[in-house]
Image 1 (cartoon, rainbow, N blue to C red):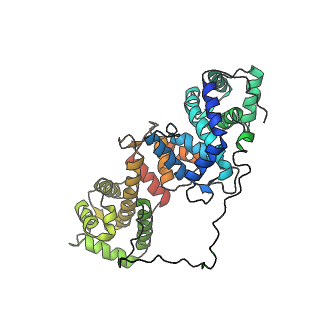
Image 2: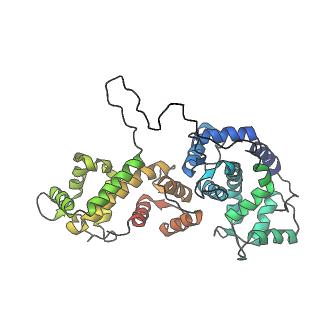
Image 3: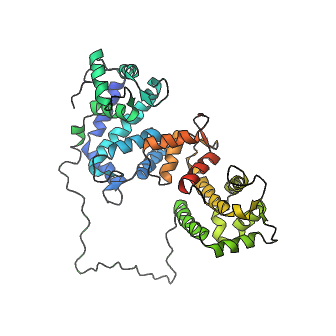
Length: 384
């Protein structure tokens, strides 16, 4: 691609030149890749990149200023296109990821500023204003030519991703980045020792004690728990047994206190022993919006819904509490995208934005915990 943005200046120029010096430092890029790809499998995930950025934000590392989830997710997705797997970053794509992380983050505020109607798209006049703020000096004809190149569908508007990709390529060319791993041999598996067996040998334990299993993450625990509950919902005998245990007096109604007691005393349900999440799951089940009759009790016909809600409200509480960096029981678009990432939901940026807009009915730019739970619950299990 010809660089039509060759004539530019402004305060950003010195900063860009410093960034490009880092992005073209082969030794530094290779060292950083080995640090992130710690298991040497030749791939890194969005979650691993996000973890690196969050860690640097706390320690003042290289990526301390890049903890902007919408920009980070777009940079990641834009960098996956050239490899064998479109969901992972491979080694040859890593320099492009670093470049996109830097420029997508830097251009996020600028794009938001020039996108005057907040539709996450810019028109020609907004595009001109943005490039002028960056210090580019082009004629009107050149601006129009560049805009037409980006606007591939001739819709008269350009998305943030398209804007960033073009500017990033103009300021740090792909040809330069492609040289980062040139001459380095591909990653190889360590050779097997002569005389060794392909079968994995257990380590000798001289203590006489059982070797402890690796502790599962909260997400892994909930994923296993979720499968067990889904299987339970299809087992009429088990469902009848749980109901009769809860409804011990046989009045056909179960109270919040009785459900709380089950989650405290029965080992299988102790993962749901989180009072704020439990209370919200119970109240939603009873409400007419949640399929109940609006009273303060769960009846037999509402029971399956209660168990589903217990799983998802508790699962999401752990994620929500982690991503709600403002601790205000509300999440913005960036935190929402981070939450979807932590939940392993493979969504495009546009899909995440559309989902957020669906939940955020009043257009306030923030989503409550209950709204987040209901959206996820209905997405994963629309009805039962």
